[in-house]
Image (cartoon, rainbow, N blue to C red; front, side, top):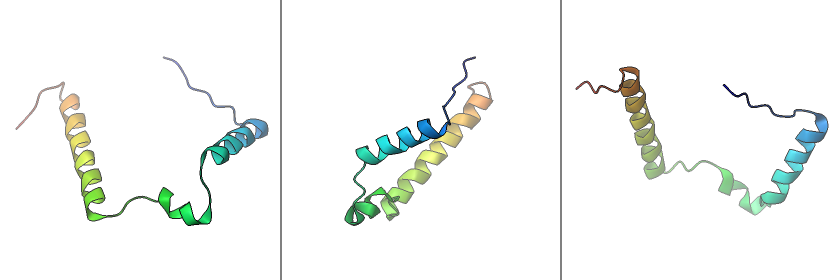
Length: 68
């Protein structure tokens, strides 16, 4: 089993934050673009995806056998 390690030194964290800020458009008029879409369609889609994932987990937990 491999482990994933992240350098949490001050320098490494600063470098990651600087990289992220260069990649993102952080202008005030774009601030809301990063928020979660709470429209009815988007919420419904996320709930359906969560339900599908739950069904998959339950199926895998039963050894791959579907129970109806």
